[in-house]
Amino acid sequence: MTPTESYQLSTSVTIESEQQGQANQWSHALATQINSEHNNIKAGQPDNNGNIAPVYGSNTVYVAETSALERVEIGYDIVTPPPSAGAEVTGLDTEYSIGDTPVTLALNVAATGKVAVTLNVYNHAQESLANSELNLEDGDSQNVDLVLSKSEPGHHMLVTRVRDEKGNLVDQTTQDFMLVDESVPGDYDFVFPDGLSQYTEGTKVLATDGHIYQCKPFPYSGYCVQWSPTATQFEPGTGSHWTSAWNKLN
Image (cartoon, rainbow, N blue to C red; front, side, top):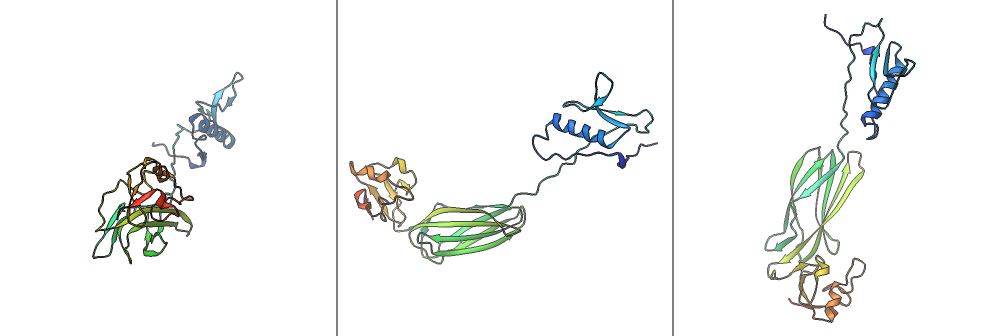
């Protein structure tokens, strides 16, 4: 006869942490649970008095001689947690040239989990120039073309907001890019403020206003590296004292 499984004799424990998942830990927990639920089945190791008790290590399962059980098996039900909600936006270039047609951002949005994704494009003055809203299932990937309503030289931002299926905001990212007039030559070393610590006499940067500036000779060149988001007085073209550090080239 083929042995049949006795579901009424089954015992289970739930592993809820990495520590509980260690072999010595779950083995002891399972043996303890078996001993508390059954009289004719014991798990553990015998002590000097012949008593079976759980140990942190290998626990043997013992069956009473009067039991009809032929063998004991241990199985695992691995529960995969639901994917965390998120989205990845790719395809954004660091720089776009302004031509006769509106600037278009050709992007791809890939989802993790069921999400609602909102894409917004702003210029440096925080004007909204384009937006799109997507509802994606886990694993979905969708191409999106964002056509800017206005294309002027300077700093721009793509802001991505991701909400889970309950409407909770789970992620928000900002990606920077520049719009450059085709008539502006591309002869510059950095897009300000990238590479800030490397600015020295003669360094050319593309500023947030779309123009190119060159760091002045010593001793004024020391001002070129003096910038932070909260201290912008020497930012080329827009800072209150930018002329102390920079020469405008175009």
